[in-house]
Amino acid sequence: MNFYLYKYDVIVVGAGHAGCEAALASARMGCSTLLLTIDMDKIAAMPCSPSIGGMAKGQLVKEIDALGGQMALTTDASAIQYRTLNTRKGPAVHSTRAQNDKTLYSRHMKTVLETCLNLDLKQAMVKDLIIENNQITGIVDMTGVEYHAGCVVITTGTFLRGRVHIGASKIDAGRAGEFASIHLGNNLAEIGFDMGRMKTGTPPRLHADSIDFSCFRRHASDSDPIPFSFKTKNIITPMLPSFMGNTNADTHDLVRKNLKYSALYGGHIKGQSARYCPSFEDKIVKFPDRNSHHIILEYEGIHTKEIYASGLGNSLPLEIQYQVVRSVKGLEQAQIMRPAYAIEYDYVSPLELTPALETKRIKGLFLAGQINGTSGYEEAGAQGLWAGINAACKVQKRPPFILDRSQAYLGVMIDDLVTRGTTEPYRMFTSRAEYRLMLREDNADLRLARIAHEYGLVDADCLALCREIKEQTRREIHRVRQTVVKPDKATNQCLESLGSSPISTGVKLEQLLKRTELSYQNLLDIAPPIAPVSARVARQVEVEIKYEGYITRQLNEIKKFKDLERIRIPENFDYTNAHGLSNEIKEKLEKIQPKSLGQASRTDGMTPAAISVLMVAIAASNNHKSA
Image 1 (cartoon, rainbow, N blue to C red):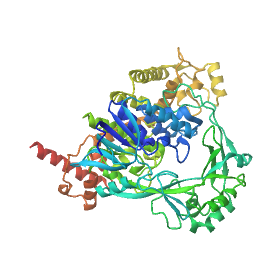
Image 2: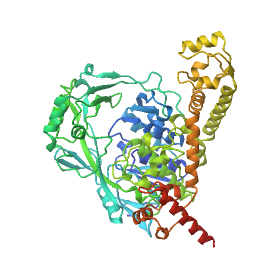
Image 3: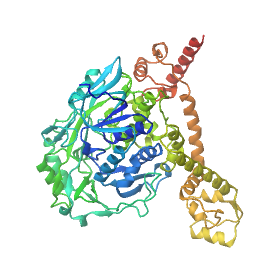
Image 4: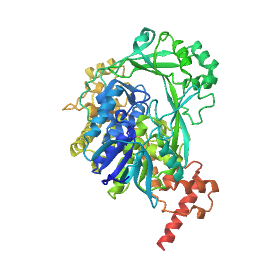
């Protein structure tokens, strides 16, 4: 049924965290964009934890914000608690986490979408893709209506042939109470995509009035929270606490006795679970020596009694869920408002994708989010932004938008996915980023604003502010390195009061700042600048001076990395002529089709000897073409 004759530049399928970022990026770059969602009331829903950020995830959200994305701003508009994690460790792993009012988050994102220029928002379930000569030209919805576009971005989350499990009960659903996308999953399989099944889950929601919170340890928000977005000036939502408790031997015994009734251990689930985020049954089976596990109770919003019981995710029948929950001290009378459940769903192997997240099989078709085998709102949002920018670039005949591993956590994640693939739900960790000291939360906008400005995603004022922060940082670092502190009485008394050794000769301020026990703020009493510097600048100065040696080392490592990235592999390179490579490596490289020697070097199984062989083969191919 082709009565809707308007042709869009980009169609985005799915309005979860990936879909929202993809649609907004495309529209903000000037492309006419259509965002389709199964349910207009579930835009940017938080079906699992009502939170944004956390270890490495906070870095992703800051980078989304620096590139003109929406997640951080919407988080700040709906946050009810902020925590900065890992503050006792170095700045490379400091990460922000916010607990959110999930209804407010969804409502705010919907408003942003509805008021965005170049963006149409419609409710529809996609049935089929329209493909001509291996090029996407549009989609067909379940009612037969066709929508046409130059590019399509699919961001279906857990909806592709999704199935919810509660004990032996199986329900076809993308989330509890929502339709699964059966036909689109079948369509992608018919096209020939390499697909698999993954599994995730969510814990029960409890009624706040049925909980004895006095049995739990109270955790308040940071007293002076730092917003997620570099653009947020004030946080206006009220802050709420969370509560931490523990399971016990009775809880564990209940799970062991009833494992056969679990969907996960009863043989009902075939999808691959995440090792790093195990269900409660998994914890009991895989960590039999543990006497207890943490439970964290979090409010799902300001105006709701629902409490998210983190740590109790399971796929047991409801009657057993009640026994498990009520075995925990403080939850003896707990009422379950929503049961825990497991969900399995289809994903497409990310080895099917180019670094732009465009499929190799179908031109103009992009995939983002859990359909690529990842987990988490933040990973989804980052991929959505990436795919949306690249879909717009393709329509506008611009080069693909690619960030490498030395530029952003986004670059690390995308490179991991398209180079190594994944067979379990992929989650971002700081340990995955080899240059993490350079890719900190606090400098995301300073790293990426110029790039975002080139794509029209941040304005000139934002770029100018970043340049001013860099210039002020440069001037203050110069001052700190040139200022000599004399060993007078006042200086030494100040140092001793801070637990630092006194000085007997003149030393540069830089040397004092490098002392572990001293901070930039401490030194303001000894040698303040003529004009006060902002907290942002002070932070940059302190990190760059204290960690100068480590930063220099990482910059040298990045140079070597860039040297390999600059060696491009010709398109349609014949790996069979690379004599000296094993057949296994040749097969992997043929499948991945790496763009550079650097990307090829990160393929599983590559050795230094194999890299040398491939380098010689590339040079020979280039020489042959030149001749």
